[in-house]
Image 1: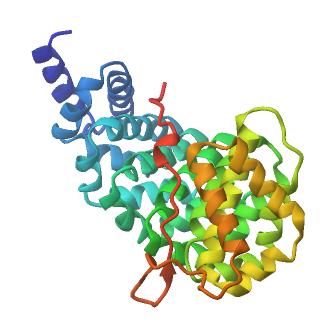
Image 2: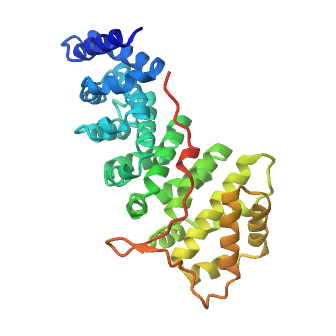
Image 3: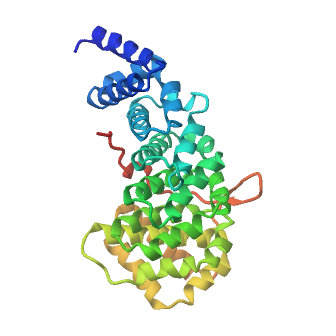
Length: 339
């Protein structure tokens, strides 16, 4: 298929999205989804041809097939052409609508929920988009609710966790996430789901959220520090995944201690030598980043507090919240094209 033919085909398909016939619209959506997957170079062309407002409207459709194809096409476009999506009026509202109806009747289709959450994760790779998306409380609430809901499909949970991770990378988003119940939902998830992959993703988000002043009280309410300590004290399981979870736990504890000060550090010290053994294990066997964070946490715990435990690099939000820059890497989460 040559370039000119592709352009003509795309323009024809986008025109069909305005048809009064539901079947014609659905057929066009199916074709655009397939094209955006098989021919990545068409994604910017699809966006420039005016498809995104029609894809946005389709997320409100009662037809699961329309939701599925529209959301998958948006996801594919977002991998290559993020700016046209974020700049389209009401696209985030439509994504929020699809996410928020994951557990309603009539509901969004599971595939549409997953594609919408994955689209957010894709957009959140751009630093400048994190405060925009994080300011949408309805989006954060919907993602938190997906994690909270026990019957959510595993893929929906994992895609929601990746989106929450991207949102939490912007420090000023963290207090709002806590206010909307993210801490309770995340710890609730790992208490009911013991799968290694879920723990890795959930603890990655927990580690980021811990990096604000509001985290101390929120973690105390759910005994969050104790859960992270238990992760460190568990017997090692062969393979990288379990160790990655321990690295996330160390990141979370380091953020908690640095934001909460000496009182939090003392709470951690009194939990015994097992804590230090867990930190030492990551110092010895962890990744380069994990070793660095383990060493930093060990230094803080061995400090008597006379020099303070809050890093000089902390900054403050408009509300006075201290934030901490101990980041994981969002690029470790993969974005896959849809089928």
